[in-house]
Image (spheres, rainbow, N blue to C red):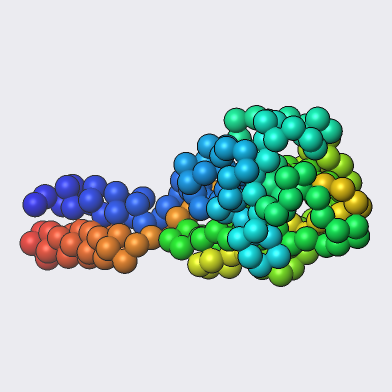
Length: 214
């Protein structure tokens, strides 16, 4: 194999190992969607978010009727979610609800991770927590989106997002739309081996050439 070919292989390995291209956080989901990210049917069990530590949240879209004549309507990215045990999504007055979801950064660079999105609640959004740490102030509103962004606090492996909502009486609900990216992917062991091997072969070939010239 020629030195030129070896050098090209080494450079290619280094490019792969650098992971310069942004990677999506594919395990991050909006509220009220199925495994493919498509809004689920009305009254379907919410599969990506738990409510207060249990699988007791459900999807509510416009076919649910009330309270969706008050909340803003459906789109192609998400649906509202709320308590599963009540047809009107009613909750206790003043009660605080924790809607929690998890996502994984396995194979991704947690140091460069970021999430941008928007959320709406009925009645009061108290906070958003990433891995138990507050990352967003409160908001009030069920007929408009409030933007949020998270740029720190991520950890390798599984991460947890909590959306903390307080009910003011009547229905309780949450809606979230968000996307996540990392600045680079963590190279796989095989990629590191290819990169190191490529540079090693290129270096060995260069040394042999110098010795032959001498």
